[in-house]
Image (cartoon, rainbow, N blue to C red):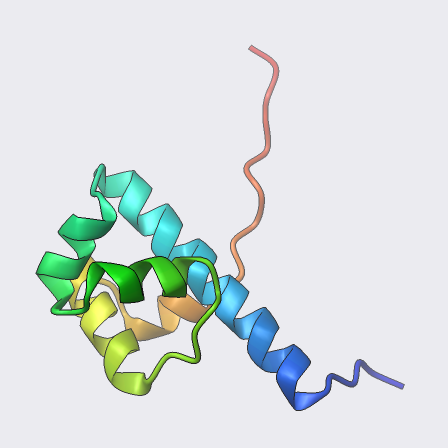
Length: 88
């Protein structure tokens, strides 16, 4: 009953969600990874690692990214629905 994730698997899925949201928010604003780094105080390398889900981020990083994007930190953890294409 229910879905059971191992700790590493759950962390990986969470990292992928956060990474996808950082990438989406960055693209919506037309920012480069360097822009995000400059606005958040994180390194460009850290931003890239977070976007690829390759890093175990810290709470501070989430707060800095949320401030840079001017969003609630929880928005970074929300799975976004795929856009639905509507006929023209």
